[in-house]
Image (cartoon, rainbow, N blue to C red; front, side, top):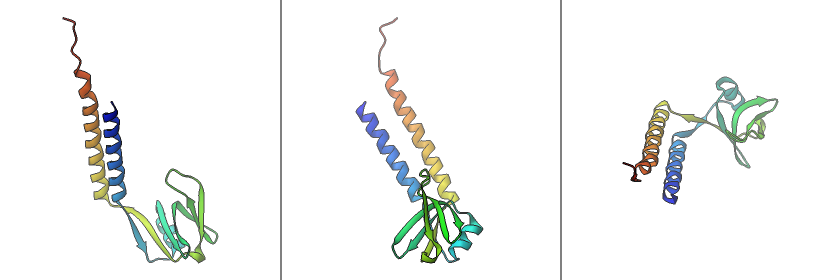
Length: 127
């Protein structure tokens, strides 16, 4: 069954790539604190002189933007508002999300069919 595991890994890798391709970082022209308070985005990318930092579930706290390090990583991260040079928000289009859902359903169906095809290969000696 090593071939089946390799196939599953390949399919999962393709799905992850597709999901990431559906997400777009969109630049915001509004002041960072104002944008986060008004729109409550799922994630923002904050650009500073030192580089960029992604904040998930961002919020304004005093003189900083704070949030989580990742969608599943709840470590706190933050950036002082005075250091922010640019802000981008993570956007996933409805059409892209629907396409991703359809592809996930199709691939899941194919994996189930491929996994069950091996069940009928053994021939029983029973009458």
